[in-house]
Image (tube, rainbow, N blue to C red):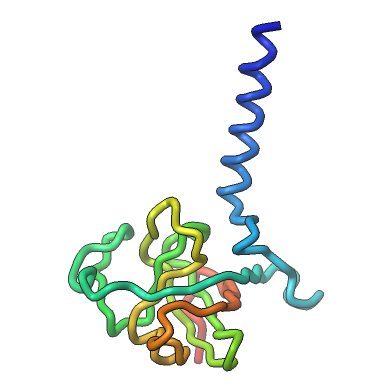
Length: 142
């Protein structure tokens, strides 16, 4: 009977890791937008913005972080992914590129630059509820 417990424990750990990797938590749930764009992934959660101390430092992808660029940190999407972030409260949106990671224990869905926070209209609040639409690996045409 002692051999049974490590197996159950392993299964629970694997399920938890898979659950965290796919980004399906209470903070970020994936939903399909409509049948035409069924492959588009939509996430809902909380966004924050970077502290100034990171300005000029290297990001996890190797790029240099700048508060003036439209980039973000995200733990559930790969580097180089373009996303559309929409402030649920006022409807403002911005298109940004994922180029960094947040602390692994961070429950927020994205951490945005100051420029993005200003364009979304939440810089003075610090955090905001957002809708994140995954656009893909190629830069969207505006």
